[in-house]
Image: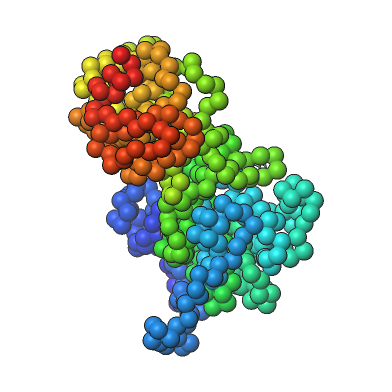
Length: 454
Ligand code: TYD
Ligand code: MG
């Protein structure tokens, strides 16, 4: 009797499986994410993440070797730092990002910058010639002897070849182009992505070889793939940045071996990604005093505070309803700050268009930027430039109060190092006498306005 091929529905955001189509995924609540795919039938026994049942047995914790912090150092210092001091042998690292952000470039720069490591660079997207041409451009002609390029999309073949070669590092670009023979569905589908990642994870754990896996994210931030993998892999690094801007931020979202709050900044140049060791110096304007509508904010991602310019333009509304637009900042938060200015400080901005921009294509979610946003808006509104040696670190609350933010002292110290003379913070911030900078404490928005604009 002929059997009808079984299909199931998968949520492309979270990987939830359902026997029928649904408009909204019951697991993650996203709309229109269910896609149909053949039911994952495995011809081989189900793969477990770390070893087959027959080989593993419980052991006393104290008898297990801990690899006392042994890490493989890559040739790119910023990547080492964000990984927590290098790659842990046998780890699976996922690098996610939108198309064109520079994932393939970074993943090829790693073997080029680490010539002593034996690497297997697997690509399912580009031909050998394309890889060679890109490598020539990135390296200026000096190519490492230890890097093998392998154009392949079958994960079984990759594991077989990598097992025979025993390299230090395997790079796979990208998870969406790979497929496992044991799963009957198209490359890039949820079952395939899960199977490919767990095969590579098992390979990494069994052989002790580190694997870097590249994954695409779709434009709306909905990761067709990597989101599903976040719980499988050891480390998730996300590449962010405005495509037009030159800066790229690599952010650690998950790290089983280190902190997740680190960021690394790169600049995309004609010869690949260049590390930006001191990003604040590039994000702070060189024009000195005289421009209204700008204020310097600080954001703390990881262990290093970052200072950058917030730009605002306030002009009379052309249409009946005023426009509000924000690049790199949540527009709803901008609306909230404008409402606070109106209600608590008496500025009528409802008939004004307000445009806001974070310099360098940064995307910011730290609420410590609020105070700089408010000051940039007011500075543009009054056409009054702020002094160039002033910066801000404070959150604005709904009643107009300035609230303290995390690690104000570290921000103040870094601001002093960058040459600022005054930093405005909340009156409740716990920070005393920082050398080289005056810490100005303000309680609310009216006090801030009084200090700077009256
Ligand atoms: P790529 O690494 O191919 O992106 P992804 O793999 O994330 O899709 O990089 C894409 C962009 O980077 C491409 O638009 C061109 C630019 N680029 C440079 O500006 N300089 C370079 O040296 C390279 C290799 C790429
Ligand atoms: Mg690519």
